Length: 432
Ligand code: SDX
Image 1 (cartoon, rainbow, N blue to C red):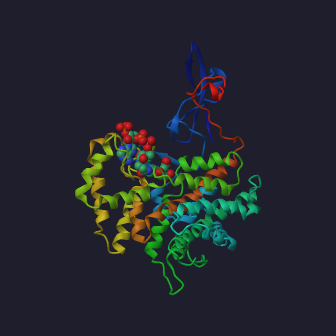
Image 2: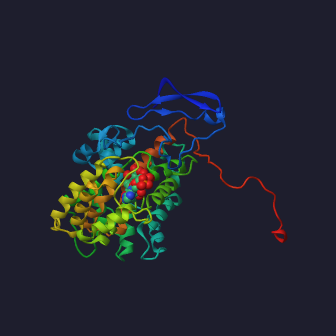
């Protein structure tokens, strides 16, 4: 909800000046409405990467990159990570307020009763090579949901939107867990209604038919916290992908599959996998200076994975909570002296003192420690981004729902600065 301010920005173009309206949000930067720009001036704005562009208004998540603040519907992420749990955070992101006991129990029951996949969907997994990356499988299977759940693809029907939202949140753990089981040649484990959301996911990943498997409550708590930390993050690349796909009125499953595909990139959600692989490659604190030098070298494409952020120009608040989780989980599994953690802690210390990183506000982000925690839990690095996608599904769905329910919503269609050939006539091949 933007607030008309009566304020305007004056723009002078080729001797003419124009007044562009300024709107205030609830908190954070105000915006200049450039929608009339092309009509008045024949010019487009130019903002590759959208570093200064608000693509929408939203009331779901707020980030203050300078203060290192992250709020879900106004609640600080560190309070939610400490005092709430993931399904309650899902309700908050979807509906805007914390639920009372009755609403929470009803929501939990609806999610719990949608965790199974249509049995025929197991056939999709068998079409993939065993060594397929879990994100390739998750992208494919999520897109295939629209081939099975036709009764929740009509985006104009509020009930169908509601059912599709619950189905996505409920089925992602099963989809991701089965991608893992398939990759290690073990049988699929079905979801169980007597387990919490996080414990259910870990049970589907780590239990085998030959013996009982009890999820360690500390591990389940850490897993739940990881889901909460990754749940939403304003208009990041994958969320913007979901919104753009949704703006064409594509069905929700197709939109989420587009978000999964975008998240896979190592510059985005793939950074947790890339960060742990980097820490393993460094291997020992003695080799850190070599990698710091490479990260600074403009001729070297290497970047310090898990560092830097488009918005956070101070510490990513999620990284702080994740660092605490890393210590708890590593103590639990008795590897508090894990050499990889030592490399991570030393790398963080050096980077936070090094002028190159300090000047560019390059701090550890959420992906820096998450790989260490997930690895200590027993997940292979190839599963890290699939877990990120599992957690981010509620954010994608909440943002998609907000966009679809926005009466001003229209198809997203950016323009360009054309730098190609002016019009020219076709030349027959014999004359070229
Ligand atoms: C996520 O958007 C979100 O909210 C994303 C996310 C979410 O929850 O959805 O928070 C999740 O994607 C976190 C980010 C995970 N990615 C990584 O950890 C990959 C490594 N980080 C970089 O690729 C980079 O920092 C980005 C992509 C995160 C941000 O890139 P920007 O904002 O486009 O910054 P930039 O590339 O313009 O860099 C500015 C300067 C450049 O140097 P100069 O040209 O000014 O000399 O900083 C340098 C960059 O070379 N730089 C780095 C660096 N990141 C930026 N140098 C070394 N190592 C790095 N990691």
